[in-house]
Length: 474
Image (tube, rainbow, N blue to C red):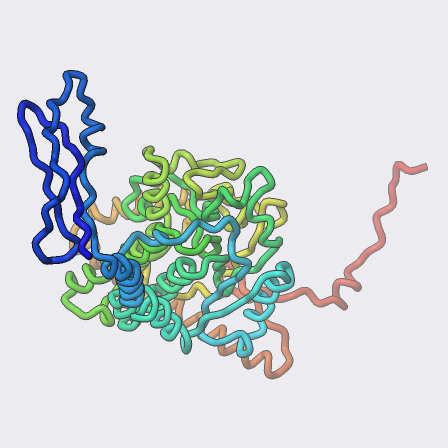
């Protein structure tokens, strides 16, 4: 039997209306048996809410009602299986973790079982001081599999990132990019292979801060803002350390940093007219493109977005204690970069020093050279010493004022001097090896290049004389 659906009385303004009825089937509706009364005119105190509540609810077939939940579930399943959800902001479907993952990450050429003794001893310091942490090393042989797993079709479906990483041949660029990808996916502590742990990771967050309020822990590396306008040092004078830092997983700042690097590498390749595998980068390009400067700028931008306030390096200059800004805990320079000889970095003997960077894996500038003046060399050798940098600036300015002929002459003299120095160093090296084979002591040289003849111990004993008598003694 078909049951008619009848509209309730609707208030109308200045007119009348007749009720309509619909059948629950597709056949014409049956006429209602009851006579529909005329609808009354709405009173002056009419409430629009009453009108909305009186709108009829159109009937829906029960078969369709039972099908809708299944259809919605199917749509959601297809949505997630297709990977479409990865187009949302990172972490959109995830709650922010309260704790940092208890895991230490490193990257190197070979796995830990093949470490040299030097690398093994340094790596062991992390395990010894953090026995409750897991430890993993990605190598040149398994890094690509890791990237494809987490950023490929079965992961975040970011083929652009996978492609660029696969094409890269510059080892330092891959090393920088890989650490950011690991920290985005996994979180935990990243540290370079030549960094020694001086204190447990539990010291990374001082007692005055709560772990749940911190998303990232970084330390100051270079704090020399007075060189901001220097033509060579300016882009490197304010930075956070990225040879050791700690993150919670899925931080937007890490993904933004990765994407910045991908865009930058593609633009460099276009500028040079070569594929990404053939790009040539100098020292400053590495620092600003993937290194500490890129790392620092991404963090400062992220803090600005989180706080809605302009953030400058002034907030981190001359830090005497840690500070928490926008979820980023910034430690003093002693924490991760003690003993540098600049930036008031102190020594590794202080309680604030958490790690020690040995720099034995920092040979990448040989393939990505610094700016090297043909006469006065690299200004970085001044190690941020003001007097040294000032002299370098004055000398290079004086050189630029010379005539082209005089410049050529001075460069030729410098090249000849460098050649003699290199030959002398090679001769000393060969001589030292020969003396070592014969069991003879290594020769030492003074500033003028002359051999320092050690004193004969036997002669020293013979030269000892009795002290002169004190004639005034009674």
